[in-house]
Image (cartoon, rainbow over all chains, first blue to last red; front, side, top):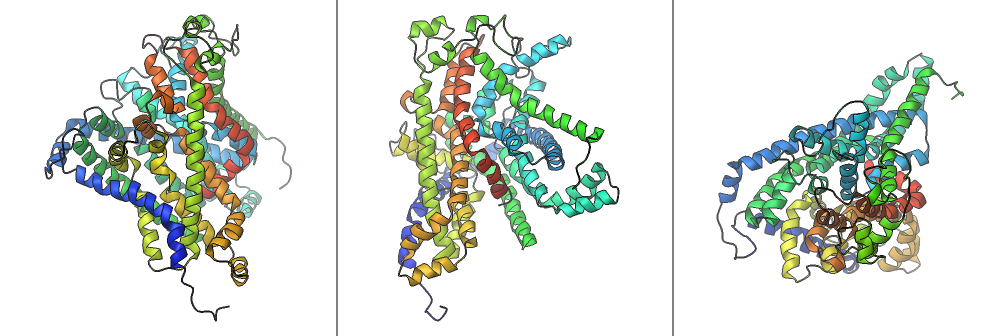
Length: 293
Length: 294
């Protein structure tokens, strides 16, 4: 078979690729280039754009609101990723040592399938200051009521908690999938040596899970930086600007004030952060693949 | 492993697991319970696990099955609401994106994995580089572009950016096609099949699993989409469930939101994915092994 001359499928190949290449050029390549161009113009959707150089960036770096939104986003990422990863690690190890039940795994996946908008609404109701279930529960213990969304110090932890609730099951299942790749005989051997569950977790699970854990961490961080839906539904950036995350900042600049150029410049800053994270993710993917081979 | 007796540590672990499951499921229970409560009871009937006077009126009124007077009497704000229509829009939106995107990305993935043509790796590299571009960055220019094309408030404008491709789907399916054994395809070449014949008759049928996986994942993400449909599909006739929920909340008075109606609408937005989970749960759970460690 190898005697035949090397195939050249170029005519067929372009037909196979045509829809994807059109989609890529029109909705990824072209807008990316346009986005860069907008960031150096004063475009506002009404008048034609004119070149302003680095003015948008200079304004951005002097804008306290921009820095506040970066800080607020960082605070959210720390709260959300911290709690979510720890909880997910706990749930995944419990599952790994207890059961292989598909029904249980599907149940844990349920919140991940639900739109963030629904989740936001659901928790607005559960956490309602007057009638919400949680405040009623607190009331029976003689506590509260807590204005979960209206109190400046509580608003961000509340939003982070909601998304932790929504994504812990999903994250746990990813980690669990990683744990299943750890050879069972390691645990059996350790058990014969009399190791307890905690020592097995520290000595076997955690070190062998590290590549998967790192990957999951980076992927969830990329998602976490882009929080928008929950905030758009529940707090709208408030109270004051306690939950004014970067995505919401960009959204408001673009679609409330029509500062398209300014918004594009802010989007580029976010893109740079996410680009670095994604590059790390790709590198990890390659590393974990060569490990398996 | 030998069968172990239930040691205290293991029992404690099961208790922790049970607590986690209850915390995961209870909010959904409370959502359905509230949806079944008459709006008039909301101040008095909020302790039990079941409503005292269960009713379906909240569902019928958000589905647009009652007259406006009836809806208002049952606690509605009087604004027109029709979740039957919004659900239908969401189903159309998700099916279109999942079906078309999966097919086109499979074609491209196959070409990148199997066909030989100059510039293949370079083109693939460029497409994959788009994974590094966050959605917000292309969102603004895409919005202006779709607006300039006159596609605002149309289904075409709503599906446009994702219906043809996503870099991830291309990447994922290419990886899969690379792992397919070559000998079947080579036999098909000897039988006189061209690339199209091999793709349709051999490669596609052999990739049912990954195609369903990527199709399901795409469906779930499309079902959750909010920002883009919010910008492009605000109008009543093209509104998706997620956008409609946001509008419903805004129409509801701030002092006392229409919680029973909102929870009925929320329940409706969960129902389709719940059905998906019941019928495809195993597949979805397994898909995480795929996409998680890619």
